[in-house]
Length: 283
Image (cartoon, rainbow, N blue to C red; front, side):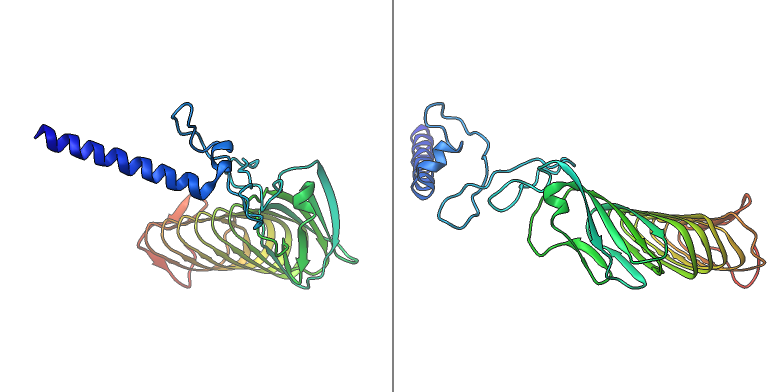
């Protein structure tokens, strides 16, 4: 029995030495120099990083970005969180839609004249922002470190907004016949102004505060754990599912609601509880 245990221990030691030797042979001297296996202390220390500059070395360093993700700073260079904070102005090339396709806190201000986009954040990140049609995004370069930026869009005609992730959108001075919002993930939207009709799709844990938007009617589909605050004057069509919550600040004379799951519609202290539906009448 003892002989068997000794043989197992010796075999394990030999395999360990072989594996370490193979790693050193593959990684070369840089492996030790860069903090891999320390032959002196016999202890494992954290990797400083991988090299991805494709020149035969391994030298990209891991960085912690501002939001604590610990993602690499980029391919062979500093991360996008590096550098002083700056503001850059871009021409708005979109028409009536706005798609936020990067991490950002966004303000949309409706105003006449040529549209423009003001981007504020770490210089390296700001320099990589582009406007492509209706979309604001980073350029095609792939980096893992993407700080959250502050963006102000000034344009006359945007009527459709798509917000996702953990982004926020504030709509100010809105004056259009229709407002269309698609909000998903952990995103949040608030709007003030007026519109004849509001169309809202909210999912995930999204939040939409439209209490300060004067609208004649609202057509809302709210699902998952999303929340919506609405103030339609004349009519509302509501489809609520999952654990979603819709609150009405007004008493529209025409209200059609379809509520399922643990969802609910609240109005002036009253609510449509889970599993009940009301169609074509006020609650």
